[in-house]
Length: 222
Image (cartoon, rainbow, N blue to C red; front, side):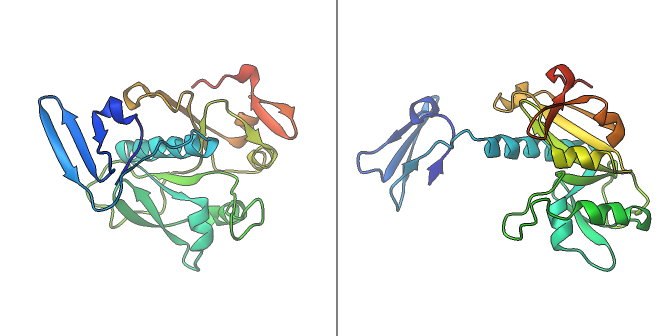
């Protein structure tokens, strides 16, 4: 049994001396849980990877609530097929969508790992998304829907040189989602986003160092 997050004291959790018992205090009730194995209390380290993962979680929830479906570039790369049909996700729905022929050349170019690694591939953007709106049945989706590239950012927004070069070449728009304080409580999370062409985004970015770029005045506002 692993408990993540707050300290045991804050959660009202007490560990028995032999670490095989847990006492949960919840208002006027006390629960005793007997565990087969010793209990370990852990708190995840706050890393850039964790921040990025949290940002993607909020983005995916946005998609489910607002009628968007997404597929990661890695998923397209690993499941490339002659029919160009891929499984997009929207909440618990798994939706088969055929990518239209008119955008396949661009998709094929962007789903190649930028670091040329087969064991730890990195991709220029996070997702390819399409707007499906809100329906009860997604079994038959017209492939002629609105597609966009998606990049999720948290904290100080930085773009790599490969992302900048790609923005100058893409025809599909790029949606950028940003959460400034990703470690804030969920009810206080403020996610802002905007959708523009790659060339429009380039007008707002300035170089800083080592092929890294940021928004002018370090501000991203919708």
